[in-house]
Length: 360
Image (cartoon, rainbow, N blue to C red; front, side, top):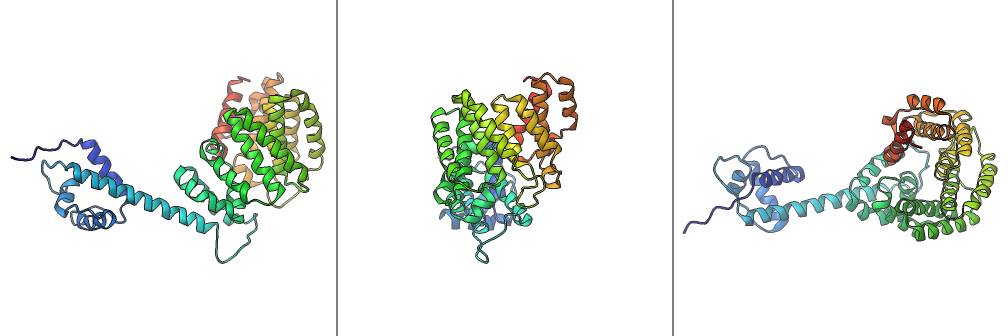
């Protein structure tokens, strides 16, 4: 009796064809390429699909051919194995990049290494499995902590999977400043999740590290006040005014003309603005954002990242909240949302929409 013809939807065949072409180490453009593919499938899976079957599968031989279920299953197995191998190889490239064998130290101001790290960060944000494969090794590396975790906190993936990396970061970081930073980051994860128990846990851990820290980079100090404002507005509003007083004392100590390690940008003010926004302290938000906009020289790096536009958003939101709607409206024309940096683009796009709609 003749075997009953399998009915495999053309959409499934097309999908498998595309997946195989995307992972194959050579192009499949001619019938002869199917011979190499047959060998590669056998090498990967230990299972054989004939040259002629693959020619019919890719349409190089015209027929009313429909692949068997066994063929389909072998192809799916080949795709799964090849995808895993490809993922592991990319993970190893990232791990090796942050664990170089030819040097042990590199300046955090090295712009070439920063640019390469930006490419790595974009790869990691697009693939949860790749991130989880790499995160522990990156956290163990001093260079990985400095050039990935400290530079590429990504609001869009923080709550879903990046936070796991900062948990690893805390296991290996030995400075109080670094621990302060990571605890503030993990507070933000649970703030976004509205998990009050874990917000309290990481806020308290941040307080401990702050008390132990001596010199703190403006970005980290700004994050500390950001977190403190958010936490106390949520749990203890009476403390907010005291925190603002402390914040102004620290603000007076911020240099307006520093030139190294991102200090040329008003990073302290940048993060404090976010805390003041969430704490609904609009008078202070107006003041701090205005200082940041008017008292600091602008630098190209932070222009193309959109950070000055972010400050304009905070300034516009404060103006609008304080009833200065005409002034707030003029801000919208100066802001270029297409320039927003990828690690916080969605976050600031939402704030920009609030400003445009004056729904504040």
